[in-house]
Length: 185
Image (cartoon, rainbow, N blue to C red):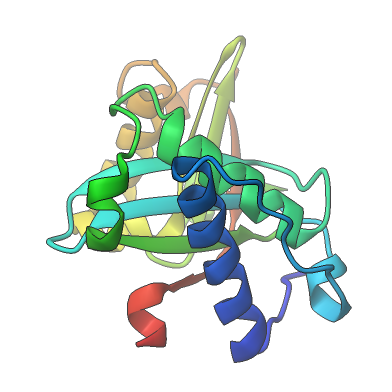
């Protein structure tokens, strides 16, 4: 079941993401609003941070919600800004040039490769100790077809392309409710 959010709830979650990073950079504590309604839900969440010109600056998430959406967004935004190993931590002087995007994940479903619809489904591939996830919007942003999307999922998992054809590879699909600050302006 996908979580439905009002425009006000989406705006609040984006404010939580930005404010948690801002307060950390300013050395101030941040107590987010107390969740109510849909924001009490638990779900997997990813926070993606881009520069205004579209370059990725950080993206980290939780596959499954451990807490309510407000706490999860706060935690994941901080991880994305300061702990994505692909990037140096966000600095205060660049904060005003960054755009926050939130992806709230539906539950995962075991699937066959032919079930994957690029741009609709995200994928999570698992084989032994290796696993990798690609959000639904990645296929659209990159212009990938189903095979390319699956192959890139394999690479994200640290496996070779085509791993999705291995009977030992588990393939899960999910959808995501995706919204960003740009959508709110």
